[in-house]
Image (cartoon, rainbow, N blue to C red; front, side):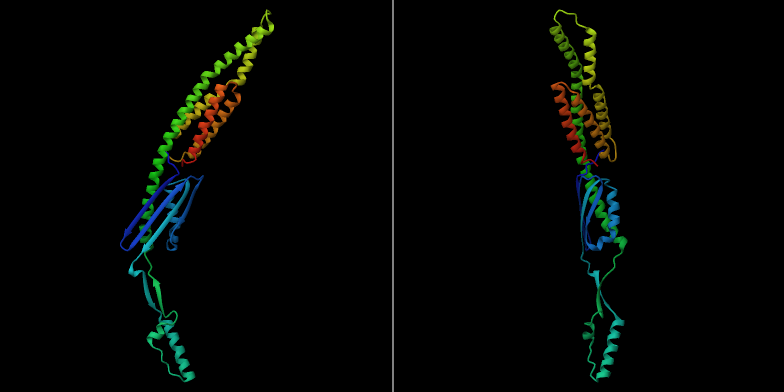
Length: 292
């Protein structure tokens, strides 16, 4: 099964006072490139998130958007810093004795001094939080993988149709090439008869010229290799795993053979067929760019 590099996945999980939303989208890219946008609080899990994504994708530019809400009342708590408060009170007593003034500090007044009472965020269990986050990420990744498989199947069907058309063009070139040589032989004989009139025509010389011409325009090797590449591409489309790079290499080889065929063609029909081949190959190469 082949996978496209284009896909989308979304997950939203709400449990108690916590809610997380994960959206993942991907497009084609030569390598695997992840971009993750999430609250700072979750930055400690970035490496784990990347590892999870790798289980579902080997290539593509993947953008991940994570939002996290926690409305638990126990999220924050007030802390009384006794040592700081004691330091303040010692200083106030010293001031009272040195300046002979009344120490009128109350509890309310003391509590307003810096660091005496602080607000601290309660520490969550890291593994419990990760399990909650990872559940949403796994679900979004599965959605992403499913859409990439569906798109990959559409790509496969389209590529198979294009390969069938290419094979038809190769068959057309194969049937036309011998006729070109035969037509050249007849034209050469007619020209020789016209020039030499009643003189004897050297059949061996004509045969020699035809052989030289046939060697120049013969595309048998190219069509054989094109058929081999087409068959190889079909087999690749039924393989598991990433085949994008392999298919790109096959398409390059196809293009090389089509170029050689076009350069050898000395016939408008074969030239047109070779141009159509190159057009189909270019379409295939464009589609291959989206295969993982």
